[in-house]
Every structure is written in C-alpha cells, then in structure tokens.
Length: 453
Ligand code: MV4
Image 1 (cartoon, helix red, strand yellow):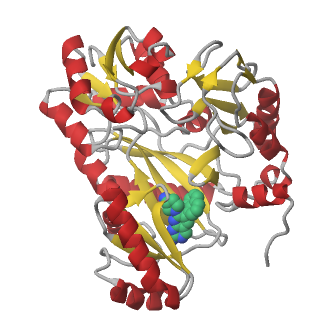
Image 2: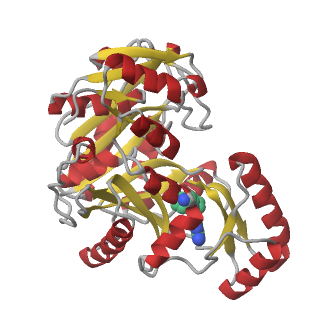
C-alpha cells in the first residue's frame, strides 16, 4: 500500500480523498493556491504545500509544482480528484516517470477515451450500440453531407477533442450542413487546437444514463449500476440519482453488460463512467466514457455500500477488486449539487458564508468543504456542497431530500438551494419523467412564457 498520498485538487473532493486516506491509515499531502489557505482540505491534510497563485493554470494545473510538492514531502502516489488534471494523460505519464503512482486509469485509456471519435470506435468494436454515424473523423463538409443523407436528419456534429457538451452542433436539415460543419470545425480548432469532427444521428429527447465502472490490474471489470443524470443545465448536472427511475433489472443488466464489454476490451483499470443516451423506446447508445471519479459518485456509494475512493486507492496499489458486479441497488439515492450561484440567473455568487448549517439525520450525507465564516474564492467552480439523500425507495429519498433542503441554512451568498426545492416539488420530477430537456422546460414554464409550437 502507498505510504503517503498527495491530493492534486481542492474543495469537497480533496476532503473526500482525505477521508478515504484516513480510513486506510495513509498520511496525506494537501496542495493549495494562495486563494485556498483557509480551506478545509489544507486544515485536514497531514502536510500541506503551497503550489502557486490563485489562477488554476499556475497552481492546480501546474504539473511541475505538483511533482515538486510530491518529491519534497516524500509522497509516493497522487490522487487527482475530478476536473483539473484528472483526465490528463500527460500528467499521469510524468508522475510514472518520476516513480510516483497515479491513482487512476492507465494513460493509454485516458488518451483513448479523451478522443471521442476513437472512443466511439472502441465501443462499436466491443459490440456496444452506437448511434448511426461516422466511423472516422470527417474529411470535409461533402463527406458529412454524404453520411448525413444515409443516417437521416437531424444529425449532430461533435468535436473529437470535445466532450461534456463542448463543441457540438445540431443540424436539422441538409441546407444547414455546410455552414454548421464550418462553424463546428472552427470552434473545435479554436477551443481544442484539433478540428476533428464526427457525426451521429441526433436523438431529440434522450435520458442521460451512466454506469459506474471499476477495473483492477488483474483483469477484473465490474459495474456498480447506473446514475440518471438527465437534470442538467448547459451541460452542468444539477441532480443525479441511482437507480434510474426507468431502468428495470433486465435493461440494467443489458446496459451494464455492454459497459463491461467496453472496459474489458480496453483492459480498463480503476474507476470510470460509461455514459449512454437512452431513447424513449428503451434503445441505448454509447455516448462517452469519463476516466475519473465523478462528482456524483456518492449516489452510487449510497445504493451499493462501496467506498469508491478507497477502492480507487486499493486497485492503484495493485490490490484485487473485491466488489461484485451488477448487484441490485439497495434503496434509492438522490444528489443535489448546491452551487454558490443565483438560483434565478445562475450568476456566480462567491463570498463569505456568514451562516452555514448543514442538515443531518436519517439517510442524509453532505459532502462539502464549506464552514461558517469560510470565504468562497471567485477563482474556481461554484460547487459548495453535495447534498445526498438515501431512502428505502424513491419517494422516501425525495422526502428526505426536501426536508434536508429546508433545514440547510446558508447565509452570506446565494445558492441553488431554492431552485432544488422547486425541482423537488415539480410533478414531472416527482413522477420520474426525466429527459435531457427537463431543465429547459422547467425554466421556461417558470418564466410563464407559452411553449412554442
Ligand atoms: C447527443 C445528444 C443527442 N444525440 N448525441 C451532450 C453532452 C455530450 N456528452 C453529448 N451530448 C449529447 N449528445 C446524439 N447523437 C444529446 C446530447 C445532449 C445531452 C446529453 C446528456 C445530457 C444532457 C444533454 C443536453 C443536451 C444535449
């Protein structure tokens, strides 16, 4: 097992990793930018190293500062959390060259899944359903037109280097294809310095369902069920739950088996997530694979009883995975992401938490780096807390979530708590009628404008 783990992250996930390390008896090194001196991950780490000024490009993304911090403190492994360098194959390689263990997938897996066109190909080769579309990146608009004609409109153009909703263009009809292709390529070049574009049939109103995957170094691959993540706004998830309200044991088994085939085909190690689009008729299609622990991992922990972060550390140390694949979920869990932002305009709302009372009681978990008198700096993402409710069934999880939102008191900044309270009261949410269009409709209805068409 590792002797000391450096956590290359901040906020709630840095604390989450510290908790796991403490339970495993492994000392931790926290790293921080000068904006994070008063952060809890600095307080709770056994040692701490300042790695630079507030901008993440000079601190949490600063590879040489992180490697130096590990070498100075004698850490022998690095946990990247999510975001920042978590899906940076180069960072993983640099660590391994410096004899530092990387707590994550092999760099080749990160690189493969980071290229969304290659990931799609790998899925297809593994017998995982993909939407009709292009096998290789498109050479030009003419090739796109030819393929789109075969697939049928609408189609979606995606940047191979994109992901998470960045660099996508929906094309409703052939007349728009040439212009949309040019825009997609331009945007991809500008954002990712890689203009590779691929094409798929566009599904108008799918659900986003993702499977929690795990592999070890001995060739074992398992799935730990799904998370429904359809409640998103601008590709930022707001609410996640497990199990999905629409997956029965049979569809769960088929989707889980497909996700396992993909991970086995690439000899996947450590934690990962296979994302699917689920159509109304029960057809499912591979969308992307994320090669990190995700923000929403707690809902899976609540319904499986597995500590995913501890398993990340154990399998990175070469231990065998002792979790069983595809067990039925126990009860139901829902997570609300509480952001420091205006619940109406979504404008960031950093500042001092003058009051901060977190709820507790049966079935409630709060993952947060917040505390009363803590000042949320303006430099990083706006997540202040993840509120997770577990219950015997979805109704009990919703009731616990609603009362926990009522009893969560934050003063000094604006948060998304009022928005979550409204969503929890929404009849469509309550009935489990979810889709990737849910928030669009929810916000439009609220604005009181009639639905067009
Ligand atoms: C799609 C799609 C419909 N059809 N691909 C958005 C994030 C990125 N991972 C891929 N995304 C989508 N890909 C096809 N062929 C719809 C989306 C999509 C979406 C997916 C999941 C959750 C929210 C979403 C919101 C808008 C679009």
